[in-house]
Image (cartoon, rainbow, N blue to C red; front, side, top):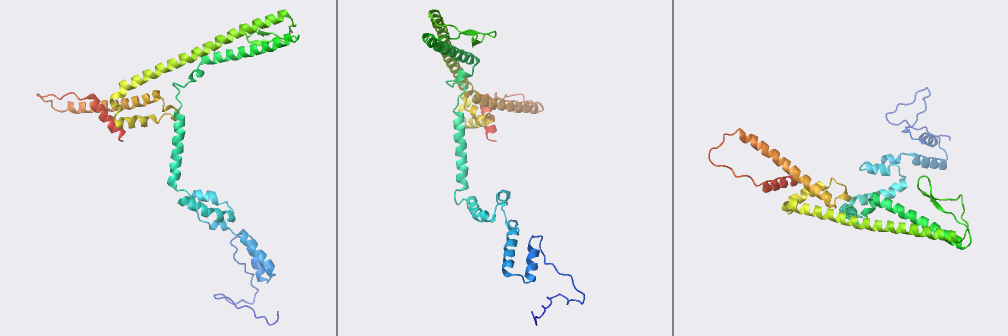
Length: 330
């Protein structure tokens, strides 16, 4: 425009020389779009274009870099989150961390209760006297396989009997070279009185074999129950006789229960592993007691022996209990 006054130089800025100075470029901080925005403003570009460019630049500014995180967990969760999501969720996250919704103590208590419930469920399994423990034996697998085979053969001949009565042929079941029963599809047996008599005989034969297998299974169940019952009684008797004198000692109980933690949770409720834990504690205590006695004997051997008076023999049970107390209180 006419009569427009040129702008005055900024403070600490020398007046322009007669030679044309290179155009100055505003600092951009390597942010895409800033150069175009400054050039548009200097040229006095259209206001709507300038405003649009401002919005474009604002969207490209590294807003996320200005966020502060209290720890790596927050950074991992929120660093790649959009501004809208961050503004909405981060305050809620802070409330959760401060315990405004559910306190940390309640969360930890709930976790402990869940772990305890899980352990109780696992420990409720008693492998030594489980009612179906016999199913883990090889003998049970053999009986079960025989029962399934006889059941299939009888079902085949029951269908065959229906076919013969309907005046239709049937196929026999015969053993192959590996002594496995297979259907002989090479030869059809025509219907008639002889075919019917043959089928009835097969049903009686395999029905008797299945009855024998059922009796064996029932016998296996009873013997298994008696066997595990006797083992349980023997272990309970050993527990009472061996560890009964120290069972009431709270330090001994704490020691063997701590030793029990080396075993999987599913085994800790079984008497076998409880006995192992108790024995381990006692053996370790006796070992340390023996080591201490040896050290004392070595020390006494260097001392002059008295002539009169003898020391009474120590009480082994009291010494062992003292050693257990020391171990459990560590």
